[in-house]
Amino acid sequence: MEARVRPSVIILIALAILAAACAGGYVRETTPEAVQPTPELVARGAYLVKNVSACGTCHTTRTTGNLAGSERPDLELAGGNVLESSSPHIKAWVPNITSDKSTGIGRWTDDQVMRAIRDGVDDQGKFLLPLMPWDSFVHMSDEDVRAVVAYLRSLPPRIQTRVPVKNEVPFFVGIGLDWFGIGRHRPARGVVAPSPADRVAYGGYLVQLATCLDCHSLGKQGVRKPGDRNLAGSEVPLLEGGEVWARNLTPDPETGIGRYSHNQVKSAIRGATRLDGKKMAPPMLDQSLHYAGMTDADLDAIVDFLFAQPPVRQQIPARKLDAATRARLGEE
Image 1 (tube, rainbow, N blue to C red):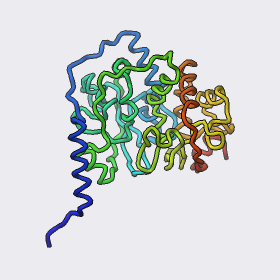
Image 2 (image 1 turned 90 degrees about the horizontal axis):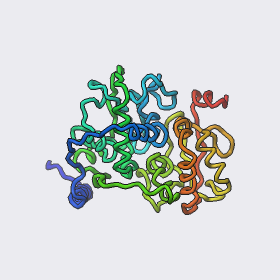
Image 3 (image 1 turned 180 degrees about the horizontal axis):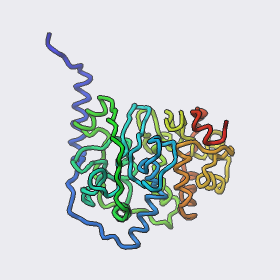
Image 4 (image 1 turned 90 degrees about the vertical axis):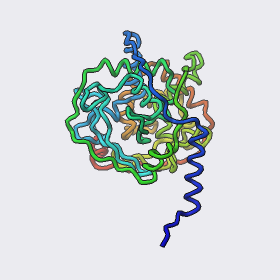
């Protein structure tokens, strides 16, 4: 019997091809540009990597490989952890982003690293899994992405001795990535950060770099776009430490942050303590350890941005922590 493809599938494939063609191509060619690592640029990159973007929460090795555990400072950014998402279910190996040539990015050019950060494309021109938050980092300015690379190149190469696990990716996600680049964007070029003098705009820029939307705007079909219950909390659980739903960060007085003060929200971000007084659960528990090092000016800008958002009434489910995380939080 002749095999048949459902018309709906044909239509979807045709639309994906048309969308990719209209976008003008998702993968840009890299250049031989080498970042000049001035002390100022390295310092800016260190601040972005360690504090604003909190890259170590995924890329720094954990003793167990579980992101709910503590980071190993001797293996900063050496990867080797396993990251898991719930919808769609993806299980992925987190790579080493130090300059080790065998297990890290030591053979990559500087522009290949910049392309991976902002465009989600690896050194071979293939799309990275959507667990890498390039939808947020595409907003990173040209100067800041150069600073990140300057800092990464300043680190000693660290060898990852764990055997990489095989990534588990749903068939439709793999096809979308490999064939059509579904969900991709135009390559980042000529990006300029807002002036810090405009605190709300600059706060929005920092929210993107801190990947806040990746959790707090997470919907059942992926990260919701601006205007669609922006920052109103996650609809699906995050799986580190059990099942944890990211909270509503809009200024709604009942389900969000509207009944709290600017300083209370700022202290919560910096102190890994929820506004109801409980300790935050992973992943925010570990990210707050990074965010605690952000400057007062940057945290003030972030909070100003949050309070400038339209309030959204969306009740978030209570977290369901596993035994190890409850013990870590002192809840047993």
